[in-house]
Image (cartoon, rainbow, N blue to C red; front, top):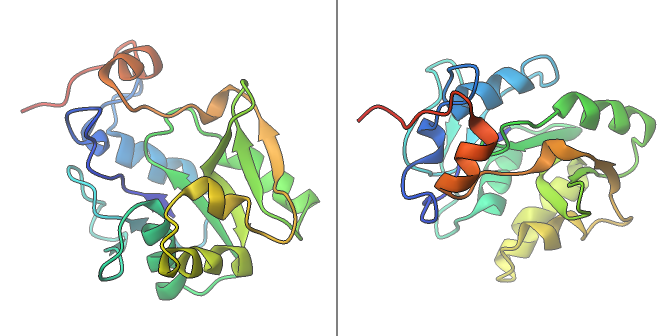
Length: 187
């Protein structure tokens, strides 16, 4: 699943509309990266900007819930599966192939990206179904932090470290991570 983004307050514009170095919007890039690895591809979340292509289901957050865990909960409710490959669209260098490879070696636990600095990136992960279903349980208890969800499984997630898990939150980060040729979206 691609998490479609939130309000993009720090960015000042919808992240889904940002153009990456290949000339595609981040939404298209995220969907393209999932293509070989996910049987069903969906976009979850209520972020502004680009919508998925018509052949890709777009799931709204469950009523009264918001944030990335609400998107995960919507996908889990709509599409039962054994595993969920989660990718936030604001991870322009994400390598879902590495998550899938590690998941094959560690099928009994979540596999989560970890930045070169050691920070978990819970919105780039491969989660067993039971772990993924925990997103809704946490939301119902008022917990909205994705990192709490990632670390809530029966075992600590297997970390896939590397430079691929840095997300874009500000125009300065976009210029650094998306370019060249980073471009502002067309008005």
